[in-house]
Image (cartoon, rainbow, N blue to C red; front, side, top):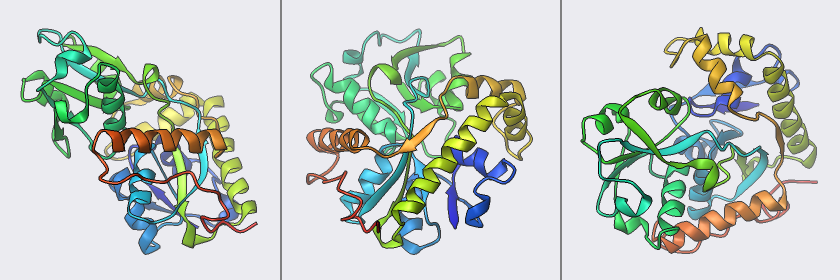
Length: 284
């Protein structure tokens, strides 16, 4: 099984490093740059499943690719936020009107921003979205090149320690912010395989939480690691790594997000997500 791994999905990063993870699946862990690439890799068959935030699978369904949800993490309330400078005049979400907002557009950042604006009777069209890409978004915010920054772990933990910045919105008060583990219907996962993948993801999560220091050391020792073991231990202790099979409630959350982004003009047409496993090509 080819399992996609990108830097922003901590669960699969750890699975790749954990001894005997997915052993019964004869795994090949395929590294790639970011979650927004997941759909194209699945479409080409370069991976068989991957893990992302909530928005990339909805983007895939908007393209008509037929997403099959395998599993979902617990909510991650501490994993995302909108930050502003303390010396700015931005004191509430309403003050973002007309401002430049740095984010990874097409990730859960877009949904967090949309829901935050909607709470003030505003929409995505009331701000200017600036793709953060490979730029140093923290420096862009501190130096005033953007007015706000939507960010997530592990960058968030570093930014929270910066004395010049202030948290405007916390993810947990606005959206569920789960990791979704998904594939496309043409890969034809059996019901047994779906259950086995979900079980293995949860097993790894439980093992990691039972040995946070060891997991933090594994992450810190990787080339290009974003922090040392102490930093990663803090990140890991801020989240619940339990995973379960995708339920109707999870699919309803996804549909709510799709409908919200359509209301905000992000999608030009309504997106149907959360269809049954059978119609997505999963075989019982």
